[in-house]
Image (cartoon, rainbow, N blue to C red; front, side, top):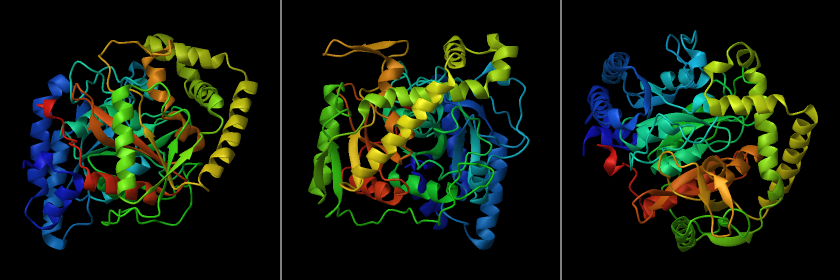
Length: 464
């Protein structure tokens, strides 16, 4: 196996055993980037020389005193919303031309402290305001979208062009591209991972989280990222947790909620079949399946848009007045629409969110996790704008992808997309797992048990 094919955890074990050096690993990933990037378009910028020097320093330090931890010497990519001192934070927009960050984002600093090696910044939909990431293509099929807005991060991990990556998630922007590219994407509990130094889209919905090959990898990254930072007003001051999943795959006693409403409405047959098979597999591991009704579904879309749209517009208010032509048409229209929303609309959305959180709290008294599709369909061809359903309804592609992921943003619950199969065209299918706030450990335990006993390929064969 070539070094770039290793998962984060596997690479860490090889480095710790002195069978693999950080220099070898980073060079393998940089070579991989050079081969696949022309057709993939995952990276906004590659920091090759910086990565090589960091890998040499990691190798020297490990030789002297051993590794700092599992991330030491392992290559990472950061979504181009995340500040790295001295590097551009372009946010996928001409509005940011010439911008360079003065300081590291909190998550950047924490990864550096853990010894991770930055190999580059990945493309995002402009200011994370979309579900496509136009400059990036799917790692499994270059004629299809990567998803967004963390499409560059997901495609890079799926292609072996990064051992892991960070993304952001406001309405599904980690989980959607993770599902479409066949990798693991974790949106933590709201406030668990600080967002200081990360360009916002919607301050009450934004999350930062990892995209990885496995749930074990996601647990290792989350352990490095989580923790209070007073510079983020939403940051939670909670005790540190051990997120590493237990090697035992026995799920006896675990209650898995299977939605009767909402999550299986308007999904394609291959997606529903793969997810239901994955749910049945959890039952075979000992879990008890509990049918549940998702509360207040009629408010989900309105609450999500009522929160996100005006908050995004407020952040861009000055630039929208001074340089509206520097925004892409799709993003500018959304920002202008936000300016027309009244304060009462935003307040109603906040009230709806409060009601939803209260109702979802009742769900967690009955189940430990909820298992459902991550997205209603696999990756669509680039340029496709809408999707029609057998019931006669039509949705825009973005609305369809965000529909199943937005509830976790509105409620703040942790959610994870896990690869569970492929459709007849060979495109990845993701199952979404949701848990009660701050119970990432159970979420990762369930995902780890599934992937250990029913593994699915996460390195895209079409990548190179």
